[in-house]
Amino acid sequence: MFFRRRHTAPVQKEDDLLRSLGYEPELTRRMGAFGNFAVSFSVISVLSGCMTLFGFGLVTGGPAVMMWGWVGVGIAVLLVGMALAEVTSVYPTSGGLYYMAHRLGGPRWGWATGWLNLLGLIGGIAGIDYGAASFIAAFAGLEWGVETTPGLVLGIFAVVLVVHAWVNLGGTRVVTVLNSVSAWWHLLGVAVIVGVLWLVPSHHHSVGFVFGHFANDSGWSNPVYVSALGLLLAQYTYSGYDASAHLSEETTNAQIAAPRGIVRSIWVSLLAGFVLLAGLLFAMQDYGATAGATVPPARIFLDAVGESGAKALLLIVIGAQLFCGSAETAAASRMIYAFSRDGALPGSATWRKVSGNRTPANAVWLAVAVAFLLALPSMWSTAAYGAVTAVNVVGMTPAYAIPVFLRLRQGKSWRPGPWNLGRWGRPVGVLAVAWVALVTVLVCLPQTSPVTAETFNYAPVTLLVVLLLSALWWRMAGRRYQVPVVNDPRLAAFEEQIV
Image (cartoon, rainbow, N blue to C red):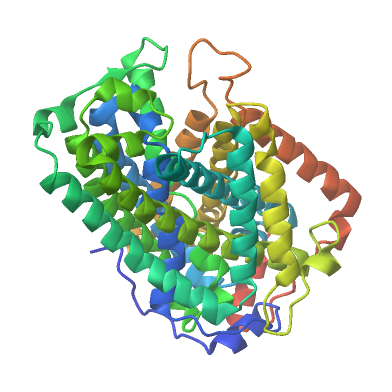
């Protein structure tokens, strides 16, 4: 297959390569290939994204769009991941996307990419952990009859954030072990949930219903537009696979392990998510009641296997969501550390500090603190969670394409790393950039009609505000942004093409 790695360039000793890219190794390099894959797979988290956004899919196209959209979007995202993996193989640093953009396009490209990536990563923490808090509240309602209120969910959310910060302060070894456990938890969790939903209920929907039923309760009348909106369930879930790049300075054989982790996390998620969505849709008993439920998957569990079974399945989902949030916190903190290392954030000297166990502790606390602030409006607005999800996607999606676009701009002067697509690199890159451009527009479109303050899609506003703030901070402090100069002759050849 064309997307497999090809050893066309020698793999340098990791620390020597990092020094050649301009950085002195500060983080502990203990993560293996599986751990690197596991962090991206955990961040994508089909048991988080698919479950949290299941209700959105039911009203924007229904089963047909959910199933076929999952496959189609998955293939498109796989192309983006493969194109990004090629660039990661050349630049395996904690900075990830912004470092690649800087080296290939210059400081302004790196600056803008970094702010978009940072927005997406912190928005991801907020979206994932707030979703986990909602499921925990739903479990508490089943177990103890607790009423789910915005205040309760926000309180649980705060506790989850603190737990994730504490876990990530434990160092690379703890993060690696948790992510490895997380990968198996997700895979076995999907198998258990689908197995129970297949064996226990006496009634299942037909294949024709699961793969062919179209439903629309979005308020829009155009089925094409509604189907396009329905693709966002998949696109929202397939996010965060750049975590493998952000953990590359803690990964052994990073030039191969990090790009391989990106690609594997996507195609494994594609398969696992397809099975999970099919299992939920086959077992759904009451479509209207499920679509109108506060937590639609919980309603499916209740109707299909009863209260005791529903509690057990909810615990599997909650566990996966907690693993997912921890992995996203790790990725975001490494991004903050790297961006601060290059002087791009206010107070960079504070956020770039590394603790005694070689963990960017201050960056971890900053990541969870800002994530809490992003979700704070949920106390007053029911549309807040959708806005937080939009923050994640509208930040991450364009950031994925920028390094790929700049790599394409290199033309024949591009020198691939040991993991590369060979002659397929350029066509895959072109398709990847085209898909990201389409999705960025799609994410910014109105999702519910009529459009009100409660249903307004804040994604384009968020994107505009971040770009404006990024431009303003560039004018105020851009002179302090200084990515190290490449000293390695093999990589220095690129410098003639930059800017």
